[in-house]
Image 1 (cartoon, rainbow, N blue to C red):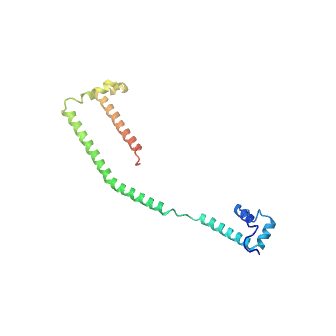
Image 2: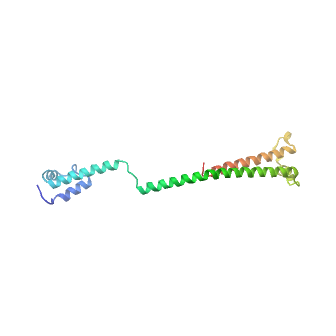
Image 3: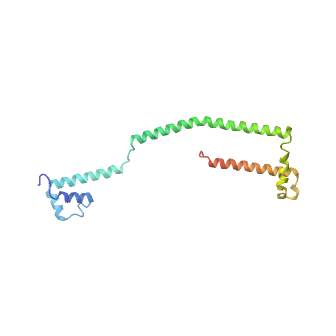
Length: 170
């Protein structure tokens, strides 16, 4: 048995570090490890630490407390922003509805009692020659207005769909 440091310990450490122990080691060094207490303890400790490192790396790792705290603060802030945004979204929807109703009432009053501001609306289908798109039986003056109104409704609908798609709150 050798006391202190062993002369072959460096060679054994290199074999252990590369993972070549005992398969790729010579018979001479294996016999030396059986006889040398320092090298035997080195092999036992290295193998024990390697097994523990492998088992510890297989276990789930906890994140750092700072990252956990940061995520909790982020979740709390986002929840508070959502709580605040809910009434604001309702108020915005209410304001849009009121504005649309006011605009519709204004347009209806101007169409009925106005100074002829909407007389040009009846002339738009004739100016665009939309009656050419209609069959011969549907070419009346009111049919062009209905075509224009339906095109306007389709435009408004598609605008709403595109605005919904473009928003980040799907």
